[in-house]
Image (cartoon, rainbow, N blue to C red; front, side):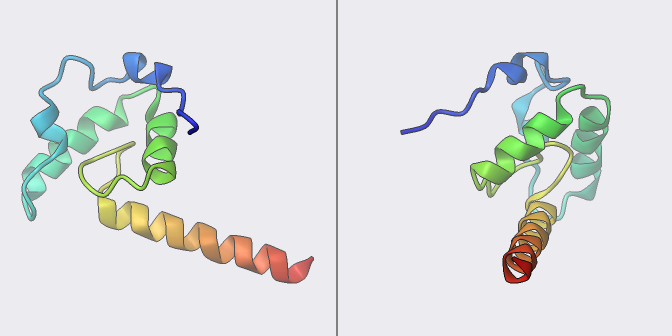
Length: 88
């Protein structure tokens, strides 16, 4: 079993912030915006997003994105991979 390096988590802007902020109730746009505002200041936002994508995190705000946004990113990456494979 491969364990992802999560050392970057210690450098997250979310350290010390109530974790519930990053798991807002469905449709709570104010809480989503508040969580994303924390992410916007974060120096490890990219690492966080990649972690969420690689681990198929289905809930919460990760790397400044909600699950719907991460699904779209995964879909776009799959399409790009398939297009690249067809070209080679």
